[in-house]
Length: 387
Image 1 (cartoon, helix red, strand yellow):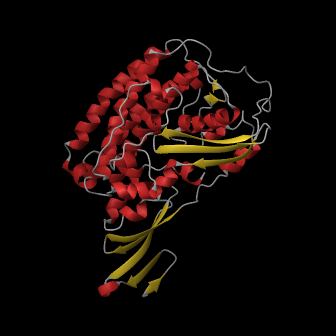
Image 2 (cartoon, rainbow, N blue to C red; image 1 turned 135 degrees about the horizontal axis):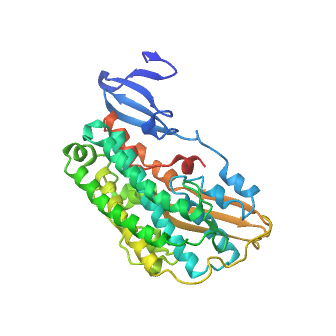
């Protein structure tokens, strides 16, 4: 070993090749702010990766045990803060399963409606930041970022008019939802998704006719079907590797069984395949939103009246696990109730956490510049990873 510092190590590898051990992150913007990848390099080729997490730990599971069933949904949204609507849904669904609480049809459909709008907004942020991470070589990475953020803002405008918030909503509650759609909201929503549908066509034309984008994504970061199953990845990652697994189809929840949509699948398993899965998901989510607006049932939005005290909702003893299909894959919530107003135990299963486990298998053999392309194609949110 020739030299050792706090930041890097130089050593002699097999055949006399010099190896450099260096950090990427946790402050690196392409490492999503709080992820540290310790890369072992031979020249610019990565030969090993050690993923280091834990920089954003906020004790979410312990907070759940100290907050009531009424209070915690607003905290649950802070796990996957890019997809807060679906994070809340996983929690309240677990409470309702353990407590055997019915949810009115209109509330179920509203949950589907906002979940798919959230998927659209999340994929907009993913596409924009991913292209910007890959940089000016795309000949328009920053352009796609600005366009995608523009469309995401339109969805956040809808959420703001529905809930009063743009990022963390507190929309879901045990037994239903907190807010009904205001006057004129449905028509505004239709106009927004019609516009986004046209803009998705523009994104594809800009990227798929760009040779730089194809070189940076095709054949890069391949996850084989076998590796996807062994590691346990989910969401666009597993569907990009040829496995048609989607919780909305395999274990329908919140009336998803009533909606017509397809589960996109690609077989190449590379960054481009994961991109294609998400681009189809844009359109399928738009299709689901239209169906939800067209078939929105009349009736109440909650099976219980409003509470006068945060400790008023109590769940009988029991335990249960629910799973939903978030923008990054399967989000699970395991809950143990002891009959009181607070969960006795709670455990999150984060899609981003499970998906990160594949990085040490797919990054070695690629260049340093490919690390950000692969990382971005995984689309982790570290509030969900560290919790």
